[in-house]
Length: 314
Image 1 (cartoon, rainbow, N blue to C red):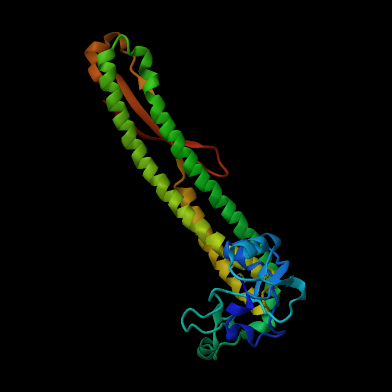
Image 2: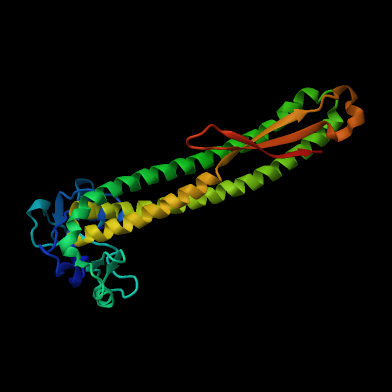
């Protein structure tokens, strides 16, 4: 994520990266909203880069006087990609500067000392640039994964709505018999709705868990995409390499999550079946109607399979 010069720590500005700091002119308010927008203006009073839309709000809602110049004319405000500590070693909390190919591990200086016996330990500055194109591909995969998660969330919401709509329609299947068997019909409707509600409650809980899980993964993806965009466009070679490795692991976790969801993916279908002994309905009593529920497995490369879930009679 891009950050204005006033918020940049010295270690970020004065790094030992070959080529020095990378200037990134992005609209700071837009970045805070997880939006990547190029800045066209720079407020010399607030030291803040702004796009045209945010400039109007900046003058209107931020107290005090403001003075603006064209963003391209600003050369003294360094802006770098904020890696949100992703470029730090998880164990030692130090900047990552090496990569151990023998163990496929990103290393800080302390890690590199521990891996001094390894044959293939390289400085990121020497090997990171080759990962920039890969990071572009990984970013595309992240966006595709986000779309897939959005589809799963929409599917869960749609199925829950459909189930509850079906729940409200179930009594209509019995309505034609109401005049002749009004007393039994009332008892059966109450019972069937109770049974259907129990089934739907269980299924809704499962779908909610599925939805919540996908929402969390999608949020994680949405949180990291703006950082990925900033690194792709303006990151240093080291940052590109580090972020590419991070995204590879993230996508692997997403794939595992997708596989787990796919293996347990099905839809619940509700309907009513009536007994053939309508003529002897009064003798049968309240067992004259049954609730039938089906779970339909959804496979990406195969036809739907229908699995009986349960049959509930009164």
